[in-house]
Length: 253
Image (cartoon, rainbow, N blue to C red; front, top):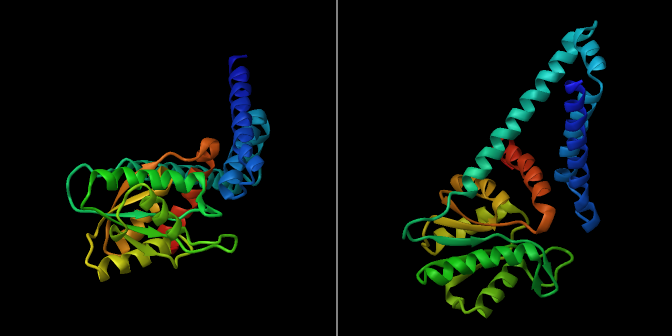
């Protein structure tokens, strides 16, 4: 009886998590980070509610096939856990000494002339560091999407200047369209201007590992100026970033 109660309780928990991951759809957010965790939860729900069918698959004529599928599924979950652990470790890898660093503010959506909430949080993190390290310089990163009227880099610069950061401390990288280009183009600016190659990345906590991977490939050493993600969107962005990190490690993207 207890086993049945436990199974149904866990199935209910996974169902609730599925609903939670669907909430970003109400804000127009649609990406793999919303859907692939739900697929995993649905598999667990089926396994919990249909243990006899699962047992038949694992012991029937095609047991080798289904045991292989289950083993691959388990291995995939282990990989996800490993990547999440690495993401958390990099997010907590914050600057704690007075080593000269270049702050990189990674681009994000601009709405009109104003930063989106996610970009505003990144600017907040950069400003907090720049205001307490007056010798530090900054590279504002991000080009202009089709629905934007100024580059993300210009928006970052304007907001930092408005808060009192001297314009001469801010370099613009306004050609990039993704994180890999953010870091690659910023690395060229850093090397051209002989700026510190130790960098502090102002971006969301979930977004720290992938820039660190690209930074290492470009001769930079990255630490985190992480910030919390907007409202309840964090979990789906962490999930999406797992896929992006896996692609960065395996495909170089």
